[in-house]
Image: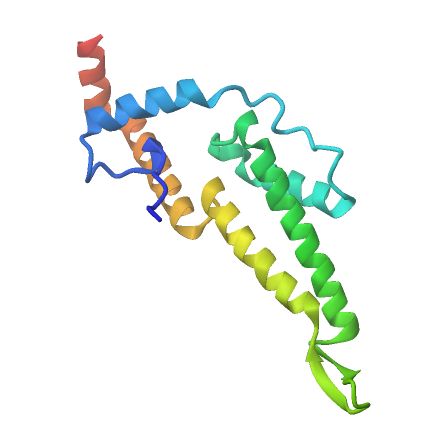
Length: 166
């Protein structure tokens, strides 16, 4: 399976020219849509899921990457976190292993099913994080782009050149 394509804003310009990246970024912004609904917590999530949803959108608000299109993905991420928390509670209560009788009446140690469920949820959560730009590498790329944009704004020579182009 091929790797997902990074948004233009996260690219460094190694595989594409800066002009191509700028054009792609403009098109991506045009296609992304509105963000008026993404900050409203959906009611179909349980209380923990709603708390996680609110946490995710508030933490990503300053990055300006969330749009209404991302709502189902954020919902799934929040729901995944909520269910992982439920697995943690079950594991704390029952333990990783418990005793069970086999068909001959002998006791044997069996792994708690909540552990397998949690591992599946953690895999899904990791995929959702990558899709939302919540992985450490995505955050680092976002941070470098923000620093770059800030430096461009403050560079007097670039300001003069931009003024000459207008």
